[in-house]
Picture 1: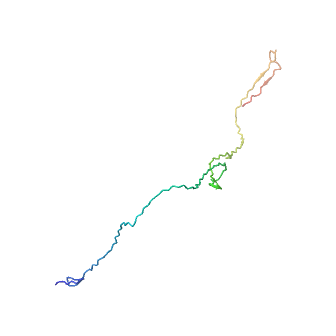
Picture 2 (picture 1 turned 45 degrees about the vertical axis):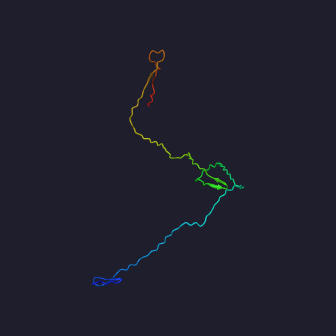
Picture 3 (picture 1 turned 30 degrees about the horizontal axis):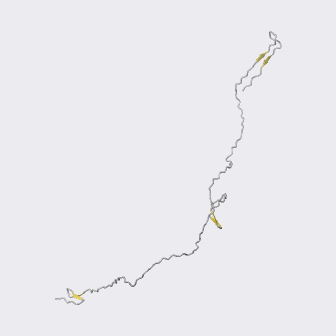
Amino acid sequence: MASRTDNNRTMGARGVPVAKPAVIPVMEERAVVKKRVVETGRVRIRKDVREYEEHIDIPHVHEEVRVERVPVDHIVEEAPQVRTEGDVTIIPVMEERYVLEKRLVLVEELHIRRERHETHRPEVVKVLKEEVEVDRVPAGADGVADDTRRRTARPAKTR
């Protein structure tokens, strides 16, 4: 059997109508811009140079700077800032100096005491003693005179 077709439908194998997809065209417009040069008129330019004199007053400024060194010689704890007093700018000039001081410092004392201790220990020591005999003989005597005396010298000192 021949299939029957409509505009939107077709008949399938079993005779059931099947929907056919619809095609809708999509359109797009595009603008194209072109430009062209069109002469609308002309211009003529002339240039003339003229020279003339004009009197003007140009200020001329001349400044001088005087630097005066003022000795201060003070000990400060921290460096002073640059300062301005009137039309004078004061810039401090610093110097580090070593300060050497000599001071008498008592570090320690030495205390010295004399202590005398006397002890007695009996000991036996040898002592030397010299004895001297002196005989006197009077002049002209041939023997031993009666006035001859015997003397015993004093013992010598021991050291």
